[in-house]
Image 1: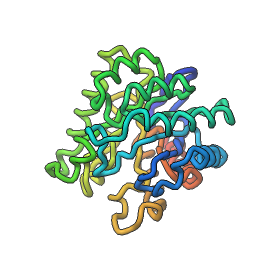
Image 2: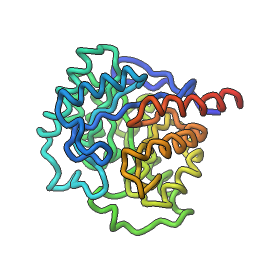
Image 3: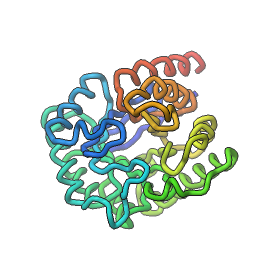
Length: 289
């Protein structure tokens, strides 16, 4: 049985647990691993975002910097903060003008971008670094009183191919202790527990079979007593021989497993397909309750 939470966002509370919430991905980047920059312009990104809402997305996650393996994020070679902001802020503003009730998240590890996005109307900051890549982020999120997603990331994207491998039995303890530490740092900074969701970070410093080991034991993260957001969409370990845009069937299968293990929010590219897959898993959970 999946736990229920009232996730407190900037201006509202989102009930989690009765059914799976679907977060549609809006990459405003020229080098996205999944869509090759198809939505890099403001107009294209806004059109895509509105289309995802029409397909049934409960939330949107707007990001302006790629964190694919090998990307220079959080290094001196990363894109400038003002470039990231020029990408995401007009999209957030335009989407909210068109759909004032939409729930928008900003995908950023930078405190300055987080603040501007929340001021523009975003409800959530999705920090893939779990507060680690910008020392100002923890206090900023505390001050902003918005929803926060804290991900477990092992090292920087530029380091992932060189990290030592994890044995299967090491994966869960590594992620569990890492998320526990991220949660502890957030609470110590004054971020209310009711505002926090956790993301195990599939693909973020985990390679190949390490991700399968994490998915197989995902239910063991429920004892952290926070909502769980999962981003499995089109990840390479699901079908490394296929290009990213052809991995949606594998994504839906993996997402079904994640929901049955307790995931509350799925971050996806294919919203319509994710809704159908989550509906099956939700029906199973309801029948088991």
